[in-house]
Image (cartoon, rainbow, N blue to C red):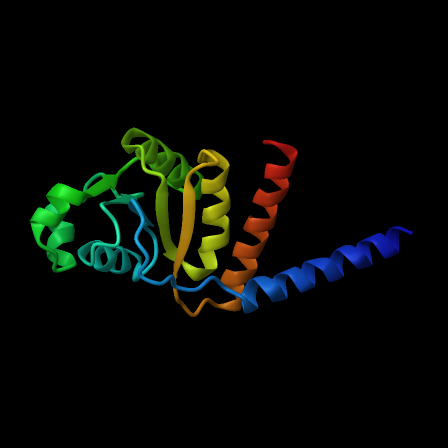
Length: 176
């Protein structure tokens, strides 16, 4: 009996991992949302957010997880973006140090501004766990859309992220 349960669990894990790696979230179309939230940590994320903001896909943008030493002018220069866009429309979130705190920082920022639709930008392999964390802290009436930045994750990266995702799902089911 124990061998059957363990075998079933292993098969379920393998099938889940295959799904996780084969069907990574994709970039979203140019639809409009109230806000854009970019989670730092991967290439192309801030570029994607700024391009959408410049294209009027949202009113404001939060970059969550920015190091305290980074100044807006440095980001404007690095991403070849007018400083006036940062002044009016970009908030640098400096509280987050991991995905869970990204979600908490984002939820507070959205609540203060009473935004109802938000586009989450992160790397494709990170999207499911980031969205799970954010969904847990956002009110049910906030519409969250996923905009994944394509990447070429290694098998090791997918393995680690899949297991983190599973662990967070289990913890969420338990209510922790």
